Image 1: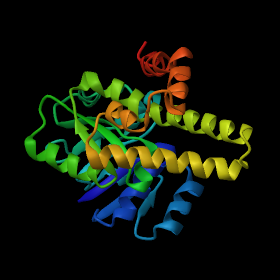
Image 2: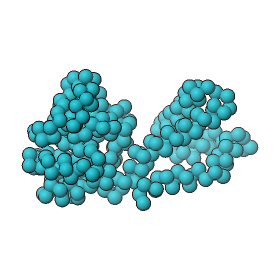
Image 3: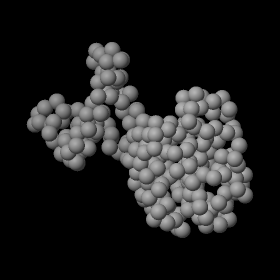
Image 4: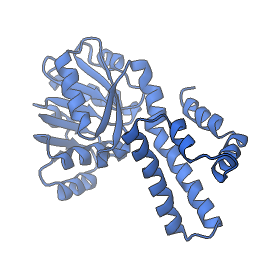
Length: 259
């Protein structure tokens, strides 16, 4: 597969690094206007092709992934439209709220269009990517794109209306999880641990919870029951979370970005 990624910022960079590390993409070309950034990628991953020319980048690509700011998408698409081969190429929008319908409207014809939202854990092969297909996509192109994003983590093919909620849970959600970890670290410091120790404890606890649920398939409440005894310290802490409106705060944070 010949892959072109336009945009090498935080999200584009995470995807590029994840795909490069996988060693399973035949050819990766990065297009970005920041030459310094491009040279950094070339130094770290010598096999990657770099260019500041979007038009040159998309020629001959099998998959073109656009990871630029939403307000730049129209400009980039107008620039590359004359050289795209929409009968052969898969075009992917990784820009928030720039849907397959918008791709079709901007390119003025049908094609293999996808709207995908991954997250920055793609760099480490741990993204959660939501894939929405356009109305004219083939099963073959869906399989191709699932395989590509599976190289950088888990994938879920969803209706386009669910990409936004997925983004709140898995992309924005990473920041919310970080806030919980930070709070746990602060609590650890208050109880007597050094910050580095508190960070180690918080990270390993989070890792342990994730590993437990993945290995067992349990619902979180089943795992909670395993460590919650009558009159014990765990239930006291859980009740404090409930008194503080923890569940409600999490749900409200997820829905806030959809308003």
